[in-house]
Image 1 (spheres, rainbow, N blue to C red):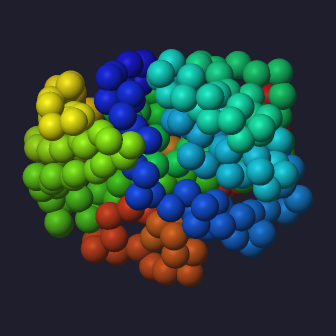
Image 2 (cartoon, helix red, strand yellow):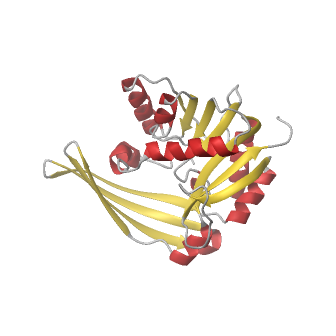
Length: 258
């Protein structure tokens, strides 16, 4: 996962300013309310990016630790927390080997973070490491690409244009599907324009692994979790099928704490 986001991270907040983080935090709190056996007070987030979920949830009263492998994103997250006068512990760490002297009431990995772990051995390392940092019966919530839908719908070429504070970004992504290995390579090209002039050009490839529901269930059980539900993203009561691309797993930590 190290170095997954290069200079792409510099423009992350502009590219995803249309993402409704507050609504997604409402969804997470709905999950906590329905599935948690305890009152959730502390949250650990792996792959927190620039703090899109962390800062709204910290504002709602949760004690929060967020980490990411991208130094650029963590610096942005710290800047945003300072400007909002919000106390969040942001760190640069990797899901597979992070170490904290603390156990949490819940853990989240949002916006396809798990998909960026492409090797099965690393997936299990990450899940087991998260389990070690959770109290008994604590929740683990994450979203991922549904392999059933990826193979039916297939990744496609996409263009996104975003503007903010005089900067315009034109981003294209061309997919390269490796169905046998459950991999999709997203080849990004970005042009950054300011005052009518191109000020930056970026080419970056992100390697994404898509997962199947029963596969995720197996990995979770291997890592000390019980799967409670898999549902469409933002639809706790919906049913997953081959037409739903983004889905969410809700699990709880079981067995003895390590």
